[in-house]
Image (cartoon, rainbow, N blue to C red):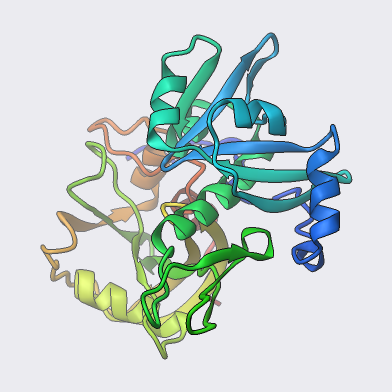
Length: 317
């Protein structure tokens, strides 16, 4: 292939750099929360399952509503306190399916899933991490209404950051699932795979959940061996990304491949193969002659792959 093309400036990773001050110490302060909600500067995101409700304005699309505006949509009485931004409270309220469907049919609103919002740039980047926080929290509440200890209906407390069981007194907290996402490298080649659900032509890093009692490094080695049959040695942490689909933390790594022989786990992956730097550069730029591509820049896989393309042999040293 021709010399590696210029990849241009690095783009921002999605769902990071949340500007909100979480103010966790105020989550049990009922008086503070009531005053914060009545402050005219307070604003809320409206979450309907996988969908986000937004307002059309003269300046574009605004994902924030006043408390009264959210209530007019039919939002539930429960709200999650996300934190403070410049001293003003930020909340997230849930909207049921009927409310979401009704809003879809009103001309002054936009209803979209978070992936579409991110890819299409419907809102400013500073909103993405806040919406991700809100969506992940409401996903957890929707699936943890009953006590895992005794089965009784639980109550939301601590401004949405805990659920308590009135029967057995068990306390339940939101959880984030750790996921390793890694690029195995061998000299001038890297290992990429694709799942059947990926868009046509898309290749990405391998990934998998960290199991109980397992380190990040061990998870990287195990998942790469299980999915591609490739043993790995040195593992180096790269970066992490909150991933609200539904509520994971993607832990990005580079790994030293000890073999280039591939044995694909067809239950997990459709295909796995080695790519050289020049080909991957074209995939990052979406200029590959056969239409192959990497994930878009909002995903950490893009940045893990790009870091290797930009690297001069020092990532794993």
